[in-house]
Image 1 (cartoon, helix red, strand yellow):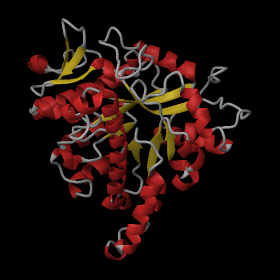
Image 2 (cartoon, rainbow, N blue to C red):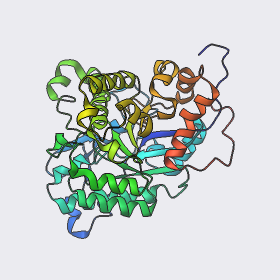
Image 3 (cartoon, rainbow, N blue to C red):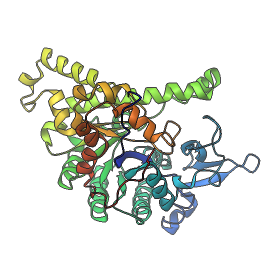
Length: 399
């Protein structure tokens, strides 16, 4: 953006943020028979560190690592416990105040503890309890957004290991007010059928019928090659995080290619999908590669249901979300499709935008047309999630 370019003053919609779940979310909501096995926080008496525990799988990531926004030291330093995490990470009123301050009108909400695709609940090894945990989380979300359901957008978690239960949960949550479906983009990593399998058709059918987009959030696999003890020991937490984060972004590129060749998009032409928290810079290559292999592999002749090229299905039904990128939103919108790009902050995670929200928006979109700015920052997401038009102007100044 040139030095004299005007700053973008419009409200924006943030299509990926997370809630730092309160310690009593499951202990207070699960049936009494599950109280002693409910996910819960354990505080280390010596260090004061709060860590979530789920089943017999041991400790999960400490609470503070999911809520580093505004922390006084750079990552991997983090708050020790729930007493130190930013209030806006767990309190909806404080979240709305933060959104007002940086000019965010509405935001979608994703989990931490259950995993970005509910996979952490697999460690409970009890299907009835696993389902109860998913339902408790989804009910918690509806309560959490109650201060302003226009602006806080709940995305329901799915018990993906049980298709029938997932269908029932989508139907139940759609009636409660959920606006999207969170699903793993790589079910095969959890010994489930691949996306192309007809096994998943009932889920796609109900999501399409309820007009709920499906999110493939990064990190829904097994993390086998990410935060390993060996990698942390040899490269340290900072470099390990850099490798793991970038690897997770690129994993979504593989999931996107899988989706485009799966046959889901031809079979369910009204169903929308999002690649969340992965960025958009790799998308032009994915689309070009998929189109090229589609043509030389003669996919259309042997698969008559594919009436369009992969890039055309993407244009019709798929979205990518970006956080910190500056090159891609300023230079690649035409190659991706301005109608297929969404903005996000990933608040309050380590890679999130916080006090620099407006700085990054201006750096990425300050040089593109006003029409493109409005689509990427508001209109695309508003259409996808049926967000009401703001009834107040954004704060001035917003930066």
